[in-house]
Length: 275
Image (cartoon, rainbow, N blue to C red):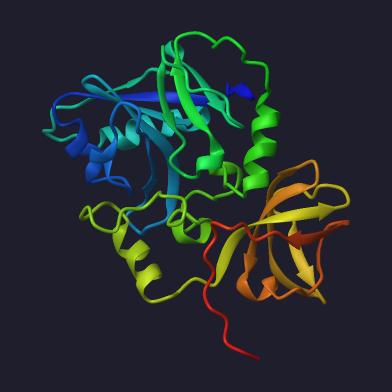
């Protein structure tokens, strides 16, 4: 029943009576669904619909807490602040107050901290913001990374490229990261058009890696044609951005390694026309 500290995560506090309405018009999911014991997974996009950051939104009292990549806090704070206008909302970097944890594999949910199941997949476990490390925290960030790679979960900037990646390429629809009913938000037009017009040509796909782990950005080739790029990975598991035609069983090389796509049960791929 592993529990891991995640020191590469930070926390942004969004407080004030307009906190829900403020975020609702900016992020991809329904902020109103965040409640004690229930987190929301959401992304912030450019006006053109490209990924900038993602986070878990947890609710506590009169504030919302964004569990995000610590390295993205310096970008998130001013970018969110520019949209405050007359909203009664206050933003603060609260990273120093919290220790972010992930638990999985049947680890019991803590009752003395801000905790919610990971909204993406039941197998992903839970997320917790606590003021100190929880008892029994013995797993490492690398253990968590291995677990999420096994599940095929993209991990923010490790797998997506700011101002380039599209949410639906990364599975955010299947992973409960997009609301199709809440109304407008920044970048919604491209996200909706991609879904309803069937425009996806690439996906972030879990892969098995036979050989030395390629660096992120290494081209993926088949018979000399480039079909994608490697993203993150460790211990024979990885995430790769692949063109859909690369999932037909053809051999895939990446650096000195061979890749084998591992399509997880949660992933929904477009129906393929018979050859």
